[in-house]
Image (cartoon, rainbow, N blue to C red; front, side):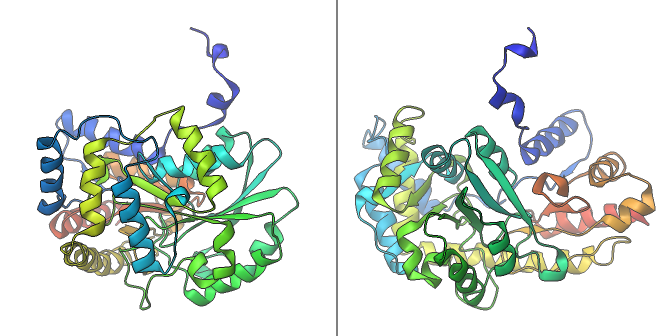
Length: 396
């Protein structure tokens, strides 16, 4: 079949680089290669038992039917209580939607909000899917680049320079995938001051790594730092990272009722409701008294891995890695290693390391930062030690 039969929107985007790397690593392992896959953003911990028990209870109770397209009343209430308890943000049921993962919520928001002629400002390094999602909606991603010299975070002046009459949305992800960079309350407030002068611009705050944090101050998003912006901010979160529930596919969003209402319409005509049993498990994740301790245990392990990985990567010839304030990613600048090996670029270096070190990493160009590599340390310390030793051996 000729490729010409495909839609322009399908031709305009690329497959997810992180999924592609993880798929390739699985293929090589199936072929007998001893590949260490550090491409996926997936905790290696199992879902806590009390959450799995809630799912078992839901199955036993016959909760296997369709739910409301935007989520069960019980889960929406648990989401509302979570926002009030942890973030000081208050939402009614009509201001909340539950989706099949936070990624789904981001997509629904973009579909509901932007169209051809609109611009969406995205700081780089960015999560791989943001720009392609914007393109799928016919809008234009406007990339604002932040280098290591500024802590991989954009400045208020950069944001101001990027905003135009066509800007419809600003997407901010903190703690950040792929860098682990965390915007402080003061930095968020300064960005909010810029946005205050652009009332047409809405904000998407992607908080999926909220609880994987060690930056030295409590978590804060832009709606918390600048309450006057809460009325034009959509906050997106989910259970996948903090509760090791990636496969359960539950995300949620909260914001202005008219925007959430449009997202609900789109979801009702695409996927309809998230899985009923997963929703029951998510209620337990967000509501159980056991959750804070479970989160803290996993976050402490990620912090320990961070400390090891950053120090170890900075001993690899040609790598330069900043410490981060959260998530489970390291994002070293590997430009010097690219030159030393003659790999050509970060894609070539990732291919070289997969072939010779049998370690799968994601090229930084997928995140809008050519010359970098993303390493996920959502793996045990023994695995990470082996992976870094292999990388160091090849690059030495």
